[in-house]
Amino acid sequence: PHPTMKRKLDGSTVANDSSVESFLVASSAFDARYAPTEKLRTVVVENFPVLGKAAAFRFLEWAQQNPEGVCSLPTGKTPEYFIKWVQRILRDWDTEQLQPELRRFGLKPQKPALDKLTFVQIDEFYPISPRQHNSFHHYVTEYYIKGFGLDASKALLMDCSKIGLDTAAAQSYGPTGEPEDHLHATRMEDVWPDGHVDLSLRLREPTSRLERLQRRVLRQVDQWCAEYEARIRALGGIGFFMGGIGPDGHVAFNCQGY
Image (cartoon, rainbow, N blue to C red; front, side, top):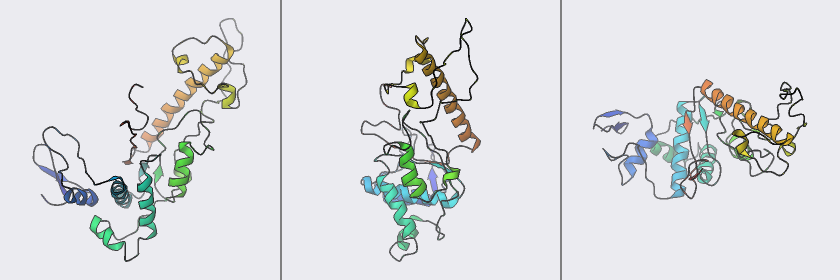
């Protein structure tokens, strides 16, 4: 088929608007998909650094096609070479050394601007502070917002040091009229003094004043998550999503046994 076409499971072809993917498949010793058992297209590359390079060109191609699109990128070790390659490509875009690569991967001549993209942070540890260097908030701020020149005001980020601390919530009362959750919580340390988040409070009755506060906070966290997903849907969804994969094969926080 034409290099900008891809083959469907039934043998027919449909348009593929990614010149980068077409180039990668053509350069690989493997087909993108082996019908009829494989349902997803897969690009096989030689090693981890090459994967980062390939992902960087695909991301920048998508940014050219969707200058005001919505993207979500991973944290951790997975995007290490991806980040380095994106920064290098943007820095050296007009150099003689990089121009042949841009043409080889099929990118348009115009250097993509990333400042109009909307970045979505897709997960986070709870109740970690964004000021901690090992929080995902800190990672995406340093490497994507600052590192890629994204607009922080357009980003959806998670500050887990505040989620659930709704001081404006209406006072609730117990069956005999006593105020519930009267413990005053202004910090996560007030809610989880030992650092342990007891998720069983989602399903069981609290046995102390502190547990009543903790259950209320957990319910507000769940509500915040639902509203966060609604904000993503209001944006039209995520146009470019890159997921990280762990050493045990898990994607994001979807670990075996959890």
